[in-house]
Length: 422
Image (cartoon, rainbow, N blue to C red; front, side, top):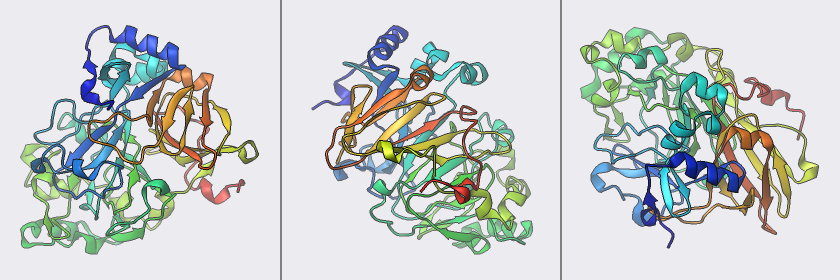
């Protein structure tokens, strides 16, 4: 069996290995699956990970409910294993982290503009998969996160139909706060933390989740993700603050509320309440401001494929990440050009990408290698990537996410209402 453990981990001459691999693949790096557990959540069992491996990190670490894509961001888990959250590049019988590849190859991988501004790949995406809802929480903005030496975390959601054959226990997400909610009401919820359910959801509004749609979530906005399996392009950070004390009978410790706040404010309720974007949470137009539906890039159905924007829009005036969903009909070959580097995951079908194997597995063992994930360089994306669906019966479907400010042609929020293509 071809496994990650059978590969030799290398730390030297990575740049030369990457250059040789890119020359062979036309700008692609194959990536191994990157699994991440969460100790306070129950896995939703839709990541295609073998049931026997859901607790491969150990029961004390929690179940595996996330798979991270093209990640150079460490997971902020207690007692984490080395390189947890970091994606590994597979080159023949060798492996090394994508983080190291980017550090050594820089603009040659991610493009001049991103490298010049960030000196790293500043985004990542994941599958987030739980049996039930998670606590009402927020992610700090850049200014707040900097107080504890971290980065802020805007994020986005798309619910791929291929990973949502069942909705699990609660396919609804509470987002924001009801218009008219006062800070005093939220403060009272924090005061009641140890009394059981602190009642924060009484102040919020739930939205039913629909496969094939999504949301754009800025920092400092409360949200309690429901039980659909979610594709989440986001900023490369793992900061958060949980504002709900009890979820489905499970305790949420106070430490998960304040873990990314300065220690001197860990019991400062006014400071904790003020971490929230009050206008952003209580706006009357919350859904209009955040809801996404796919928008086709162009009318290409007659050519046997369609590329659709699934994540788009700006946060505080900046395009921080975008994502597309490519669907190719059986037997079709097409060339797709993009404006920047991207991480790709295949969610359905069998085919090729620049002649390399590309397929979505039915079941994955914890240490097993797959042929469903790649990183594409900026030059490779601009030059055009050849996709081929080798199946006679099934579509080939891939999701790919991009870094900041590389898609100026992406739609604006609300563009789905004006979609001119069927």
